[in-house]
Structures are given as C-alpha cells and as structure tokens.
Image: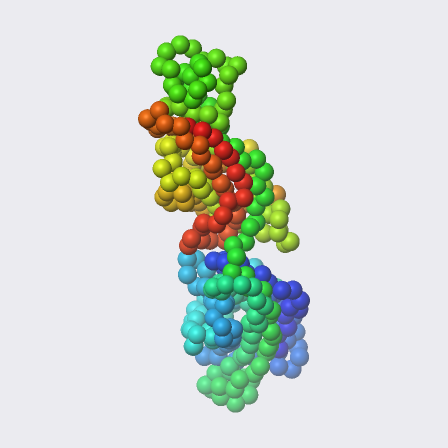
Length: 341
C-alpha cells in the first residue's frame, strides 16, 4: 500500500487562477507489508498501472488545467521534479478525469514522490467551498501472476480535498506610492495660466508638477510590494497594473515603461488596452515575483497638443498578482492621481 501526507488545509482558488495541489508519499510497502520504495514486480505485471481518478464539483467551478505548461494530473518521482513518463490523461466526463501511470518503465515512486493536480477556477460569481475527490488504485495487469487475479483493482487511497473558490481576482500586491508628475518642460508658462507662452524661461518657483502643457513629459510611477495582503506567501508569474484615465481622449502618448525588481532594472513592458482601460502586464518578463519583493513601474508619457483647452483629468489604478494571464484585467481603481492639461 501507499500512504500520503494528511490533507489538512483548504486550498484557495481565485478568478482565472491555476494552482498546483501536491501530495507527497510518506511511506510505501508491498502487499505483504514489507517496506518497498518502488512500483515493481512485487506490485503488478508489466502491463499493470496506477490509476488516479479526480472527481470535480458538479457545478463546474473547478477544472483540471493541462494547458500552457500545466501538468493537469501528474506523478513526480522521488527527486520532486521528474514526471512519471508515459502517463495518459483522459477527461471521462465534465466532472471526472483519469490518469494512468504504466508499470512498464516505472520510475522510483517511493517515499518522497508526489501526486500533483493543476486545478483551475471557472467560478462565474460569488465564493463557495467545493470538494474535489481523488482516488488512487493499482491495476495488477492481464497475467495476474503478481498481485491477485488478472486486472485486479487494489484501492490505494481515497480522499476529499476542500477548495475555496472565489470569483474575484487574487490581490497579491500592496500598492504604496502612485504618482503622475511631469519631469521635463517642453514649453514655458510664466504666468501659470496653464497655457503655453512660447517664449521666455521657466520660473522654477511656480512649477506645479501635476500641470502640463504640450511636449511636457509625464512620469507615472507605481511602488508595489508583492504578497503582503495574502495569508500564505506565494510566488507569482504575472503582475498587473491598471491605468484608468477619467477621459477616453487621454492627452498623453505612451513612450516607454520600464520595470525595477528590488532596485534592479529587469526590462520594459508594452501598454495594452484602449480608451479608459489601459494596463501593463509584467508577465511578459518571464519573471518570478516572490513574497516581499519590491516592484517599481516607471512609465513615461508625452503630452499631446491640447489646443489651448484646459482639461482636468484623473488617473485611477489597481494592481494585483496572478499565476497566469488574466482574460479581462479591469476593475475599479483604488489609487488615484489628478492633473490638468
């Protein structure tokens, strides 16, 4: 028989999130109770296999994710990283997935090996706690010379895993400073009426960095701490910074946005979205963001012509962390900056 670690905590899945549940084998023995670290001749014939069945909630709130590099259902060898080769994974029904791990060429699956499930959240609204049931069986093989009659099924494990499912995006970030200020001065405004003068020199005593005229450069800066508003520290592959101008005709042209991680420059990201729904996706950097990391987003913009018409604008922002691409990364802003063009 095989034994695994206790399932003693609720796994939380937030919107568009995939999370890996991993269960490590704590012991193994042959059919006579003798310690045995391998799935070997003592267990089954050459065409025998281990079978893992995953039963999902009927409401469709949780799914198996085997896309974009996810395993779906897997069995890691004792080294904790190498997958059991030759496995076949089948979706039997909307609520049942089956994985078969062959005896032929079986790796070391003794103490320290793990079953892993990549679970995805498909909940459309609200919060609920659902159960995922997992069974592990050994099928002896057609010859039946090792462990019982031909194709005998030996039940190894049967457990229920509670999962809290949320239709909201996992925050995973703590937004500190959020500023939008001009850094260069393309035209002068000596009388501070927010209309360019076209001549003269800048009076530094009258500069208001949240007022802009044509050709000024504006710098928007986010200071973000990763993971400080979640209960359990996690690593994230994607950080999103939303930018929601109060007017769709935002009078700034994006120049370049660079990212610093713990004070080190790690690259640039492109502006995405349109109108009043703009955002940056740091997942394009192929970077891991860990609990406590400091991320600074520094975004440069150039002021367009305002035809001498004064426009007051505000910028709202929301930041959050995710484990993959978020299909619709828009939500009401929490941080805010205000200026006038």
